[in-house]
Image (cartoon, rainbow, N blue to C red; front, side):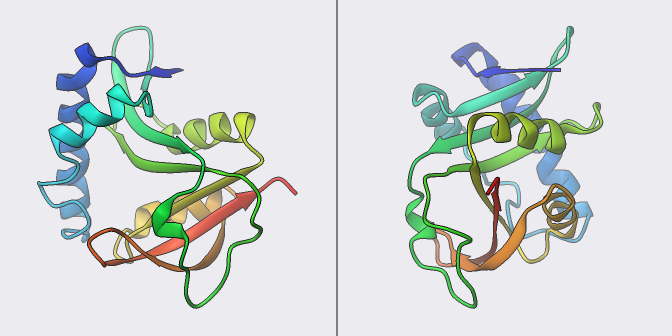
Amino acid sequence: MNIRKAVAGDLSKIMSIYKISQDFMIESGNPNQWGHFYPSEDLIRQDIKKEVCHVISDDEDIHAVFALFNGSEPTYEYIENGEWLNDDEYVTVHRIASDGKLRGIFKFTIDYCKSISDNIRIDTHNNNLIMQKQIEKNGFEKCGTIYVADGSPRIAYQWSKN
């Protein structure tokens, strides 16, 4: 598997992966986190333009996508029922999705992030039990609750090398 920054020509494949993930989340008891409306094509276009959208591929095709942000995440400034492990610089992983054809996508993504940062933050919806399990399995600690831009709560996690 390989990771690279997405380019405009990847948009159609990326959106098809998000559709697969939306359907999977709905079928798995998490109908509200993304529904069939998030992320929008416009948001993914912006992610590609900002060079934060990454794709994971094998020799044949793109199978997964995620956004990786370097620097402060505005929705992480306020956290309740806990605290971050530290205030050091961090990267944030958002919008990770897979077409389900390759195993180990989450671990591959997180290992990549660990190779470029000593601190990683991520969040997920309370109903996204599959993602919670993956996050915790990969060494993240639950830190508290944050609120995304629309005001809905998310479970916040952090991994720190130190």
